[in-house]
Amino acid sequence: MDWVALTPEEWTAVRLSLKVASLATAASLPFGILVALALARGRFWGKTILNGVVHLPLVLPPVVTGFLLLVLFGRNGPIGSFLAEHLGIVFAFRWTGAALASAVMGFPLMVRAIRLSIEAVDRRLEAAAGTLGASPVWVFVTVTLPLILPGIISGMILAFAKAMGEFGATITFVSNIPGETQTLPALIYTFTQVPGGDAGAYRLTLVSVAVSMAALIASEWLAQRASRRIEVE
Image (tube, rainbow, N blue to C red; front, side, top):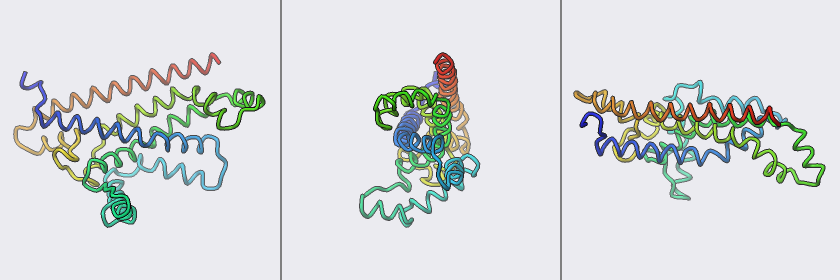
């Protein structure tokens, strides 16, 4: 049972990962919906550039993304110094920085899922609501939003799973501080670097695999449900 049961240190890393992933997902959701809507419906100069910037974390090495976050949001960075001096918000080497890095890495997955859901909506339904006198905002809230809700949930799940497993950008930006920034992947890495750490690495790997698999299954189920719903309508 000792091999199976998690130690207090491991539970701390799991709880921190859940907190980081939850904050990263919740904080990025409003921006994810707005960006997905702009990419799906917008016609403006720079749309291709915006799409490239949004998906850049998927193709950049995570260490590069973490370094860029450190340059921008570090204590001496242009954004980080402003936030620290005027709002008292510090990201570098804090768990909030881990949440920021996780949000950046999971953002493309969230946006893509929501964008595909928006593009699948029948525009005639929105047009019909508009002819009845509904404002564009009200049409979005009452017609579009319910139709894309499965895509939103799917995007949130994918972003959450990505945040739970994020390592490269996080450890570069906020280091690997036990109890503060040492998330589940960081602790697994730590176990692999010390003699006798295999058991802990195995335990946390099983936890990570279980969470990721559950997220992927839920995302696939929601995607299929959304497809059937659109076909019926």
